[in-house]
Length: 66
Image (cartoon, rainbow, N blue to C red):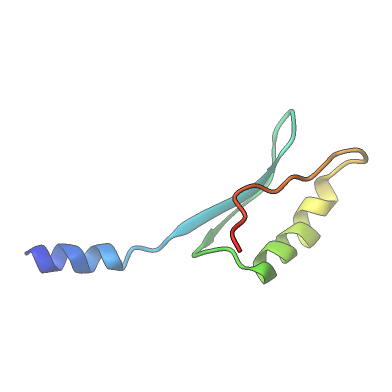
């Protein structure tokens, strides 16, 4: 029974979340399976985030691992 529980835990899919925050709302939320890589992050910025930012807003990244 113990081996069965360990095997199930290993097969759990990791879901990740990425979004922008303004002083009024969450913008461009994205949920995806696995970890974020450069290609996914750059696509999210180019296709979604850039279109929602207004002149004068600043984009700050947090929890960036290299």
